[in-house]
Amino acid sequence: MKIITGEMSRYSSKSAYLNNFYMVLPDDTYEHGSYYGDLFVRIKRMDLSPIEHGAEPEHEKMKGATVLALNQKGRDFLETIERSLTEEGIPIDEVKRLQKLGRDDFNKIKELHELVFPAYVRLRRMGYSHFDLAA
Image 1 (cartoon, rainbow, N blue to C red):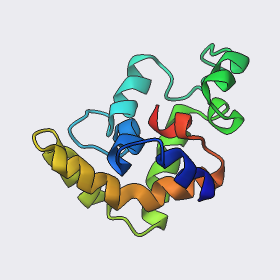
Image 2 (cartoon, one colour):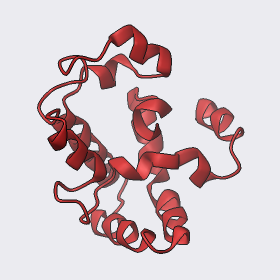
Image 3 (spheres, rainbow, N blue to C red):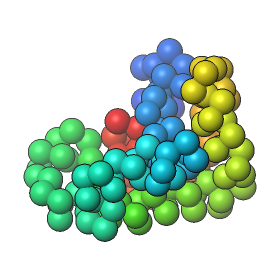
């Protein structure tokens, strides 16, 4: 948690820190369940890891990617995200509701970030970097 606190101190708010984390979260406004779900289908990476899809590991690590994320298939990554929400007792339906409302009201995105922060922390403890989750 010390690392996260240090990283967050460089941002104006928790929402600014979490930035694009919402893109990996469940969201029924996308055909494949999230922004990243649609992206992975579109670029044919749902069943491939970034490395299997052609990413250069050393270049990706320099940007902040972890070996964990670089070796994980898109589908497995999204399932891990959803499992972290469930394990933290965060209702998936509430995440989806806030995602939908957040399209028209940024305050709902702030509310979403507050709700899902424990799952973000869990994912970081599992070994994911901020880059893996929110870049």
